[in-house]
Image (spheres, rainbow, N blue to C red):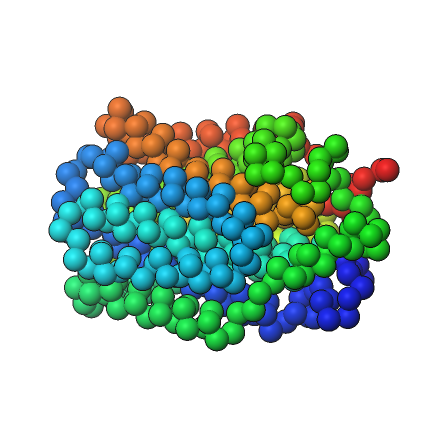
Length: 435
């Protein structure tokens, strides 16, 4: 067994920290549900319920643009805040910002109110999802990172998918706004109560790991940390490293950004496209939900797989399979076909998504890992905003919703090639440092 510390109190590992690990998994499930309540009903009813004119693709994408830029910025901030104030406190702040979201949507007289609610949702997601992931990485061992992030993303995107299905049915049985209000209030209140009652601070585990590295008391293969880089860098130094100085980190950051084109597409264009094809809200919830369920469930396997065979190949294959699934959507019609293409897209996401984060964690020093993950997540979730703008402009210029699908598929293919050519294997057990 590889262990990062010799301190008997602060032992690393899933089993050693089982209770806290499970509490954090439950938190990210609720984080996903909070996001999911905005992903089926709201875009599908944008025209009839919130007054978005038909064919206004840029206006339709406005709330995802707002979400992406805000969440990206909050990821950047969250990593640094968590190293100064602790992971638990940042998680609580994130949940408090979500409280007004379902209320605003309930009273929204226009689409601009939905955009405002999504700004708060972006703050919530940037703070809470970052902290659940970072806390689990604090608690677990290096040889468990792929599985750790796989489980984290499984729980989160299972929550996204489940919320899409549940809110689809609630909006059919009740008024859509009432259904979203009830669902959101229950989820957010439950999250605040359980965080205050059961979640503990995990920052001491990260500090213990950093001390062990400094003392040379760690065991197992040595990661390929960036050369000639300080153990306590400034925010700007980490940002430059992640964005362009280290070509591995830059490749992973751009891949994270581009893969969010897919999620922006699924969030807005999928429900609108399927609604235009005559599907009911529950059926749309299930088709989009299959994407989320396959993405989430497959990460049980794909996260652990990368612990065994490495990160790079699953990432590249995932980018290409995911892009292929997007293209498949347009090649036939019917619930079965759209469900199949959604499943292919979700499986591609399962291959790439946890392993991009694991690759970053592999070669980020524990002293600045929180900042590195925050900056990677900044670039990744900025992809929501950039992707929404690109897809909205492309579809607006062509006058055809399907243009966004083709742009996304091509972008995923090119991005995967970038990772293949510019990155190296980061798993320390497979490609350890030689010095």
